[in-house]
Image (tube, rainbow, N blue to C red; front, side, top):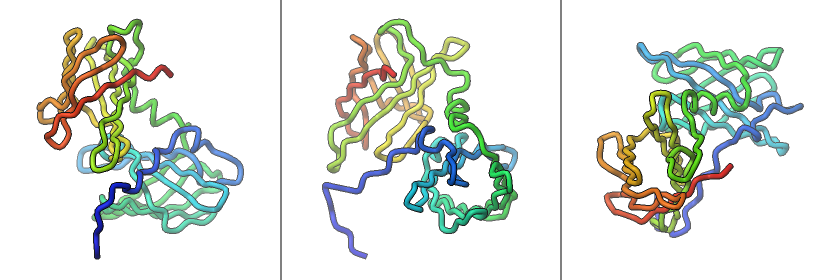
Length: 242
């Protein structure tokens, strides 16, 4: 295998959104499907997103919302018909074979990841996963001095690619703040981070406690320095209005 350096790498597809996976006539599999996986003593919530374009191709994503690095994870559908589906989740060694029931609302089959496990998916509202991810979180704010909201910014080009950063900052019922990060251009979504806010200073830290962003909230913007690959880069994030 030969590898060549490029300044124009292939872009990662945008994640599937609720309006794209809404059920429609003539597309048996299209929709949002929900199940659970038991891993030892833990029960993990899994979602399968399927969209069937009109050109007979099919696209799917596997989401395990209790493992943040497995959100918007590509699922490769290797076989499907009107009533049977097989997909593979590369990278985690998972394979699923299932059959769609006559109602079109339940998929019954087996998940294989080292061992076989029975697994049933049920069709749910396209917004069900978003609601599960945001349960107990309040993104509302009353003025620009408050931190909650969905913030977006773009880092300077790194290896020829501009990296988008999205921060989901919410207030919790106990008054604390929570933050989760998306880096769509690296296929990373909803990674929980630590946050400290002492108006107007903002520090966001990784799982190891090391800061990855130091900045200030001013004029409705978050401006500061983001650490990526051990290098500081300037970053300004603006709150999404919608």
